[in-house]
Length: 425
Image (tube, rainbow, N blue to C red; front, top):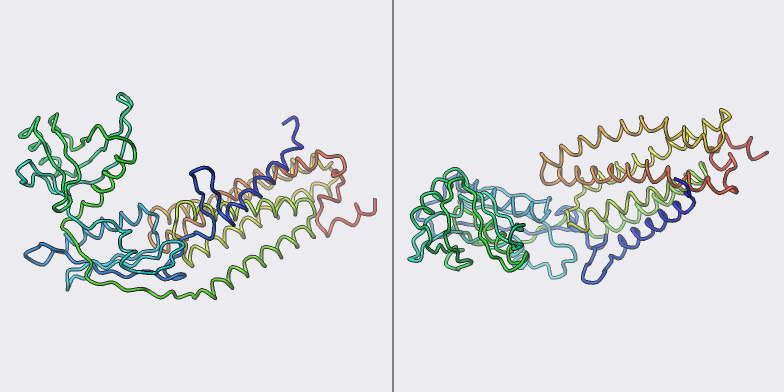
């Protein structure tokens, strides 16, 4: 890079912008980026809602298979909304599905009946003919997504059916070819469509959607209605948090103080590399917060542990690099050469330590749920930002600072225990 002098200031500005966005949120035109105050906390931190759903319209008690299918649909809805801290269980004796989930971010009313609406309609989906006869049950729909048809430029809704639904769909589309098929949520008509082709592979599309919002709304309703039966709220209540509001505030204050003390020690002991380390840590922490607040991922106590662990690894990465640079300067190299070889020699140890944790965090994210997913997510995002900030941004910032003649003294880049010699020069 020919002119690297402005790089430090550009990265510093990015760090300040991320800090501002994290602290206060940011609105640009119609786009609002949620900050840390709008993070959705888990049940253990902010409490939540307990709701029991029971089937309606069944002559007999639902089977365990049906209840498992209902639980799977509800869990899919919660996952789609990034509500990772939730507990969906089955009451086999009463034939109910019990759901525990946290309050929305910024919730002030704390009314369970209002919060339950976030789970979506508990109505049953069905595909009927014009006479109202049910042709295919909605429970056979595996997934539905809004898509853009590149040939027509119009949005459409894709549907994929399971094996039994694929067989039924082939029969229905053959029997009712060129006729109308209606889609109902219980007794509410949500879409009318014409059968234009015989579908044998279990995948079809509903065409001529007005725009993406209409296609997404229909896809969401179809996904929501893939319950094996209609359900209604039997009872609901609030869940008290295990961690009180005061404890959360104390924990946040402790976090700010800990970060400030770490920065003071880093700057005192490592000087310029310490300043760079503080900025890279700021990028890492704010990046993690935004990765929680923007998609509204639930933050639990285990998730906070993931943040703390990744911050520790971020500090470790910067310390290793600073120590390597200091050792290279002690061996007699110029600051330019010491910075290059210092980062080069520290890369493998930092990379090895971080990549193994990254793999473990990814496994917890993909295979875990609830608190384990929250821990894996915060740890994963923290390590990713450690790679971005602790390795890449730190190296660029130090090289940028070293390009200024006034900042090329070896004492600016050596740790306290090795600095006396250079201070005396």
